[in-house]
Length: 466
Picture: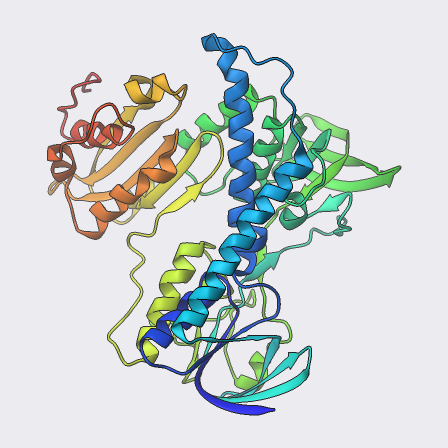
């Protein structure tokens, strides 16, 4: 079979399906090609499944915390297969929603694997055979996959990646996490709350490389409180598997250790999904790591071919991919659209949560800004304390002369729900005074952002100004 369309979108993750829908809204005849499930890695095997399980783990933690405030629940049990079934039903519901959105907007969904034959022609391998598609434009949204660590090949049983970790049939007795980045700490924390004995091994001298040190300090203390053992400046050197368990040899600053566990989770990075895509045939340039080069209008080195999301490199964020999908669609439609990365929020669903947007204190100084910093601890928040979450803080970084907000950093309860206001403030060029003058409802967590903004100006009420 053969066909001709305005645009083919390859990959139906949070970048691809959004691009396809926006293209259809703009009147472009669009085919969306996906070899697995609508929603891609994020919806089916990453963002949504992990947050579902994290929610369950936090619920368990709250039940256990209840005894400290007079609520005693004896003998509650975790039916993990039922938890997994609930998680999957949530994912399936969202997948069905995307399918309805595609159908309602007139996007044709084609199940198969696409490959470029040339810049303007693709071949799609489907269950029914090959389909040839001529297209004026193509959007590559194929995402990324977990990097394998030498000496620790994935077997889906003992040595697993993040996808496998979110589909376990039972909570492991012991879990070794190789890699102290976002995925490793999110998954490690959730299983620690569910009763697993968790050890984290990180090669660098800090967890969450690239994250502010004062935030990492809060997370490190929380991990210790939750019984998680952390080895930084350490490497996993080898593994011996037997009887469904594994003994991992780890080199630490204190010497070599042998750690016996049920499961070994490897989360040491991601690589682009470009193998078999035919980028050479299309003439698309990639960088040294294989990620596709794209400009702020998502254009690659080849006219008519665009790339969005993880396949173009870091940051690996679903909402970044979605925004880039909209930009690519609008550029294809002839609109004056471009990506602006000055206010892209990032959230880490550890416990407590981390949320960041804009420049850090160090980044601001490196870029030549003189800054004023306001900080408000959740220990002074009535709402945080009444909900059992007094850890962490909100930090506002502002330009000293103008008060313009350059960045916001948060670590604490539910900060994933607070970072949106900070993102809007940076996007609109707001000052710390603007945030401080805005009346926030009491008692709520968002008051903490207001107080941190007031602290920039040395006029916070509920902490001492220093």
